[in-house]
Image 1 (cartoon, helix red, strand yellow):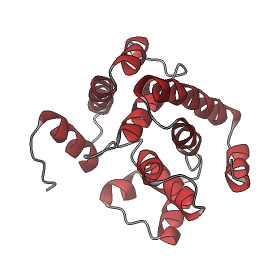
Image 2: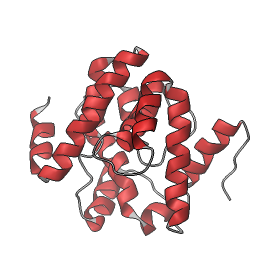
Image 3: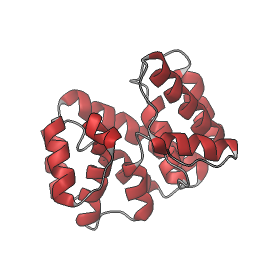
Image 4: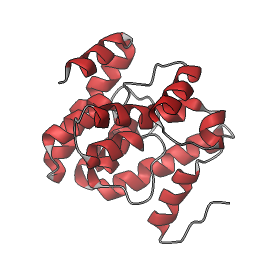
Length: 188
């Protein structure tokens, strides 16, 4: 791994490092089960939460510095920027490829048109063994059998989580759901 990524990883809390390591382990298994590039899967796993512990104000400032455009959803909840910021860090270091960057960028919101690697990261982040919710183990087993079904199920689980907390759905998440349902989605 690139020294700057190692440095960023080492700055994270042990809790976050352990989460990342569990996601990487799931990504390795998903890569094997679904014939994905193993190194790309590992890099996406290691990169996905590198910016997760930046303060909200730091995420906004870093997004501005990197020229990442964002909308009112990210302004209201800057943690949504941790994926795009981390993806841009890797891209700027020429680490990975467009599939890796896409996976990291959209691992929180999902989005229409995701690659299999991006769907795998979205799933892995949601089903890694440190997550505690009813049905997690069932979703993890499903992930190794059928990535598309697992992606749809984890997306539905995410939407239920948001609804239970009366949180809005990100337009990208709405677009991902519309794509799964075979319907067009046009943000308001």
